[in-house]
Amino acid sequence: MPTQYSKFVIDATCHEYVHPWTKSCISSTAGLGLRGIEESFRIYTTVYL
Image 1 (cartoon, rainbow, N blue to C red):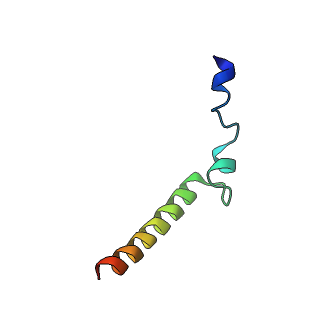
Image 2: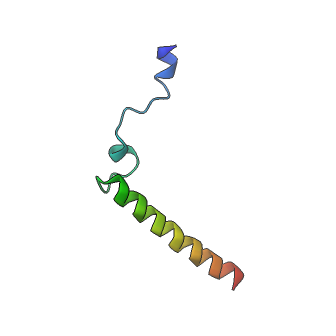
C-alpha cells in the first residue's frame, strides 16, 4: 500500500506548490481572493449590463 500511496503524494511545501510568488500563505490567499472578485465583477458586468 505505501508504494501506491506515494504516487499521489506531492513532496513539496505549500510555498513551492501553491504560491511560489510569496512566502506568506495569508498574503497569497488575500491576493488570490481579490483577483477572483475583480475577475468575477468584470465578467458579471460584461454579461449582465
